[in-house]
Amino acid sequence: MRSDDEQIRTLIERWAEAVHRGDLDGVLADHAKDIVMFDVPPPYEGVRGLDAYRQTWPPFFQWQEQGASFEIESLDVTAGDDVAFAHALLRCGTQEEFADNPENRLRLTLGLRKENGRWVVAHEHHSFPITDQAPAADADQAPATGTGQAPAPAPAPTGTTPPPSRPARP
Image (cartoon, rainbow, N blue to C red):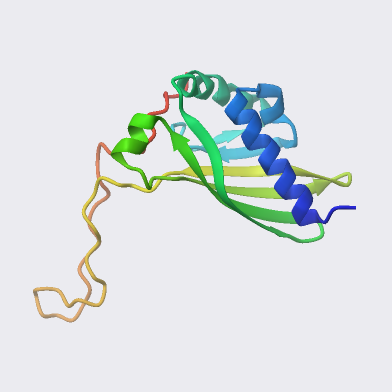
């Protein structure tokens, strides 16, 4: 029998292949009925439940038909007896997006639990790094005021659109 780590790795690789094929049934397989997903596009509070999760995929598949890729580059799995987590980096974007930013990767984090002896995804989180802001100031550098205190953090950028330009939720 395969180890839990191997079972989970296979589950995630099958899921990614189903996403790439636009296979909704394959995407939904091995997901908990009470899945919670935080995605790149809104809603910012995430989606809860398998039905809401299901509704997020058709717009992505339409975007992906433009020739976008969805490929796992690295995948790490840590499994306990009945809970596990995994994190991965994926190439997710169009050729044009990769030409503009060849190093950009989708960050994926999954939380899994064992239900009736089989692993299911209970939590899914997708994100891209913000790439259109200036680098953060060196934290060890003293501020110009000479107070010895670190400067206040810069406000969050406004109007930032994380790549790739996936369609908004319907």
